[in-house]
Amino acid sequence: MADNKGLTVKKNENFSEWFTEVVQKAELADMRFNVKGFLVFQPNSVTVMEKMYDYMEKSLRRKGHKPYWFPTLIPESNFKKESSHISGFTPEAFWVTQGGEKELEERLALRPTSETAFYQMFAMWIRSYKDLPFKTYQRAQVFRCETKATRPFLRSREFHWIETHCAFANQEDALKQVYEDMQTSKEVLHDIYGLPFIIFERPAWDVFPGASRTFAADVLNPDGKVVQQPSTHLIKHEFAKAFDIKYKDKDGTDKYVYTTCYGPAISRIFASVVIVHGDDKGLRFPWEISPYHIAIVPIGNEDKLLTKAKQLEKELSSFCDVLIDTSEKSPGEKFNTWELRGVPIRIDLGMKELESKKLSLFRRDLNKREAVAEKDLVKHIEAIRNEFTANLIKEADKVFANRIVEARTLDSMKKAIDDGNIVRCNFCSTGMDGLKCAEAIKEKTGAEVRGTNLEEEKVEGKCIICSKPAKKVVYVARSY
Ligand SMILES: [Zn+2]
Image (cartoon, rainbow, N blue to C red; front, side, top):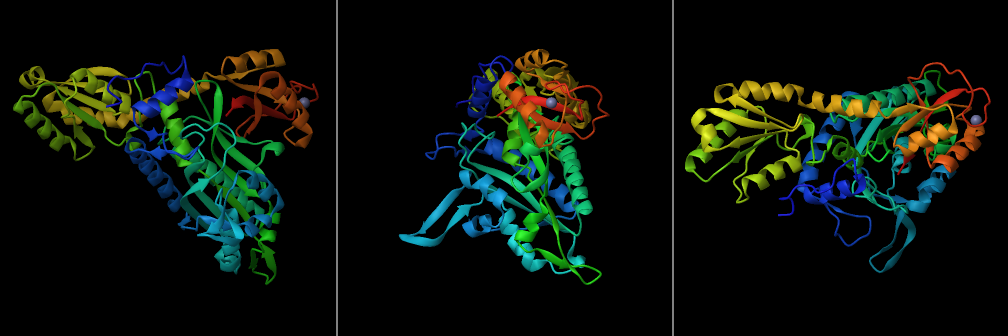
């Protein structure tokens, strides 16, 4: 087995190698598939992502989104209807040009995102103000021919995501949806998956192709680079016009809808779950999305041990998922395996425990061993279950908060960025007039202006680059 030995690389010493090692040793993905940038997701990641999908989809359905399954192929003519969208996505689309031996009349894109598929149907489906708001989502794979180096889960050419597409009678309602999407990110990504992030409104030069405003959650990796997690967009009104999505308003006039979209990429969010909670022993998963909660490891081959293990399994399986490790591995190898795979609790069961009726638990949230009288086991594990995810969140939030640093000069910004931080500073403008200063930051520090925090207080002072009065407080970080 590949995962017997545990990890050899420390997360904070060499994050990049740690990540590769954890993906391979915990058998999350096999990268040997023979198409570049595509990989095989294995059960240890798929079972977690299935649960992640479930929480996200439930949250969306509660808020009135209806599920759809759209075709994977989108005609090129759909993309051509909106110019900024096509110029943004054409370079990275995969195209289907043949059916069998025959050339197709029109080339078809493997969807890189599905606005242009949904919108042509919206134009047929939406008739009256009574049809609005029209809130959809689909769970799908999307395909992007990334030119940057691919990394498993973080940046692949095929990824598994959810995309929501919604239409509204006016811009105000559309903007409310964007805020609701951000709330969904907080409820699901932070409170269930345990990820800390800040949601930024992206600067004008960094909006989604076809959007007028873009908001995105940035999660921080140990190497100081941020990963963009779900983004939500207020789509340009021109987009609805290009697809002729109209409704008859109360007053009898025809009006164009306003649209939004939101894209939580489950396979990429999974990468952040691995990275944020993982440690030098391997994975740690929040209780809610962990494939198993308890691994019982019998130490020895006595029949009595297996009988006891099965009895414990029966008692516990009413409220958690339990497995018994009956493999031929040595106890040490078994410990490594379950710590590596992120099972929240391990119960080590030897003859000593059996006779003393005192069990030995190892809990992965605190990496601590605990002794529990057998009669108190259920109560004890219920208590751990109730605080497990909160413990992971507390630890992750603290790491994140400690790495947001204020800077007043470009030199101090550069140093803080080099030390792996996100830097907060005064900035002239996130409109196109601020682009020059953003480029100066990029040149000096290699980092980008990620945007403004919507919860930010008032701004006073001068732009860190041009010394003009600052209109914004922005956050600056390196990214992938
Ligand atoms: Zn400036």
